Image (cartoon, rainbow, N blue to C red):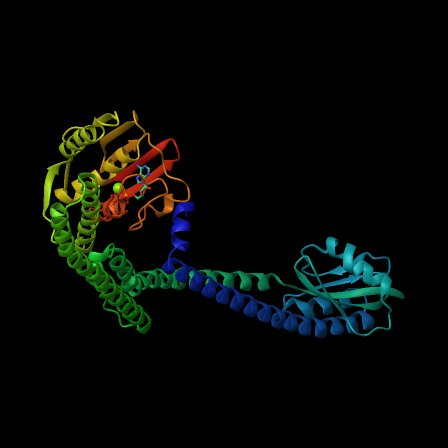
Length: 452
Ligand SMILES: Nc1ncnc2c1ncn2[C@@H]1O[C@H](COP(=O)(O)OP(=O)(O)OP(=O)(O)O)[C@@H](O)[C@H]1O
Ligand SMILES: [Mg+2]
């Protein structure tokens, strides 16, 4: 399995579950195999020991009681039918009798020689050992008036053969049982976990306030997933209620303030005060009115039915460039634009225009006199990228994270704005499925990048 696939597998719930039970089943089979083989090995060896023990004692009696040809014939008769090996060593360590032995030379050099020197003639219990895959029982015996050794051996190869057979069976069980079970388990888990994936997908599709009315809907028989579904839906319901009452509050406040402001404005026009004072007061009333309009607009954003159309984004950008030139005329702001032609986009044109003009407006207002604004539009594969850059006063690091907050106005704010411009732009762009990033350095300028 390559590295990527492995990482992908263990990063999923399903992969981890399968891995977990595969390891468990594998471990259980392995432990079972070890236990059974250990038990089998011990029992079999006991059996062999028991038999060679009896035979070595009988061979001992023969070696003690008979000599020469007669002894050899009796011993050969004793073991030939049982497939055992008998070795008799003379006191000087040389073999004087061997039956069926595959490699006696090796054995006599080791354990039997040792036995010849270390054991006493009077010890009556045979010593057991394994040498060259042969299990032996050996005991000292009187040979030619000296101390010799008689040993009876039985091949343990049958033990290995049985062991390998069992290993084969275990591997066959793994191949024919564990792998199919794993495969089926993996497939069935996919089905079981489908509702969970469905919850995640549905939750992901709730991206803005307008989609808060959606509810998560799955068909699952499992209690846990139903609980998650219920909890998420209750949360969505509460959020929807909060957002709705917030919107209603803004809308009510805006509507309530609109009329008295209009009255105030008309009264100001007819009041006997100096022209300068009247101008200032009317300007204040107008700014307040703009704020109220923005507030009303913001409260309606999620609700108003949008008129989606395909339009030329290139033309919208060109118009913005003209707007920037007009607005920046007084401060001698240079406008540089690099707009790719024929870039089409599908959205509510008026809303997007408003979002972009808010950004251009900021770039003009917060620019230095004689500064530059650059407007770029480029389409790269599936993405449309809009960059609006200015060489203005920039935003301090402290203010930067807050610029999208409603009513936030930075310490550098110049004109009489409401602090709603960027909040509106961000919501509109996100409603279009886009992303907006604002980067800024104090005294160097600000760059707004929009990816649609
Ligand atoms: N291009 C920019 N250069 C420097 N500061 C900026 C720029 N754009 C935004 N800001 C800072 O971010 C704050 C928030 O901007 P936003 O557009 O939301 O509000 P505003 O411009 O103050 O008011 P309005 O609602 O009239 O747009 C501004 O007050 C200003 O401090
Ligand atoms: Mg603004």
